[in-house]
Image 1 (cartoon, one colour):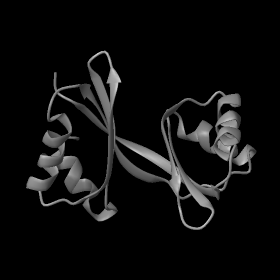
Image 2 (cartoon, rainbow, N blue to C red):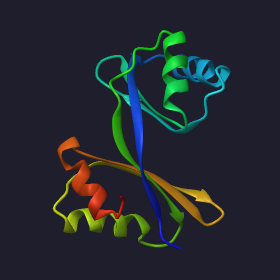
Image 3 (spheres, rainbow, N blue to C red):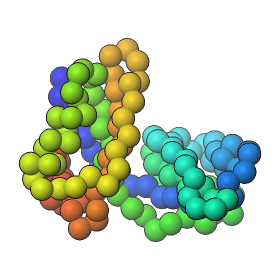
Length: 138
C-alpha cells in the first residue's frame, strides 16, 4: 500500500521552557474539544521552547489558542505522511524530493504500531509547490 501524503497547515508558538508549560497549553486545547493530528516541542534559544501544532480543525484550534492567550505564528504548511511500515519507507519519500532538487528542512517519522508509520515533513515555502508535484499531491 503506498503512502498517503497530504498537505497540512500548522502553527507554532514560542513559550517559556519550564515544566508544565506544554501540558497547560495542551490541556486548554483538549478542553476546547480540539483534536491535534500532530504536536512537537523542542528548545528554541535561551529558556524558550517552540511548540508546533497540527490540528484537524484550524479554526477551532486558533479559537482555543486565543482563549488560552497563546500567541501563534502565522499559518504555515508542511506534509503529513501516513503509510504501511516497511524498510526504506521514509527514504523513498525523501528520494522523490531529492530527485526534484528539493532540500528538506525537517522530517520526523515514527513507527505507529500495527505495521503503520507516520511522519511530518517540511520544505522551504519557495519549494512547496514543487514538492507537492514531486510527491504526487494535486
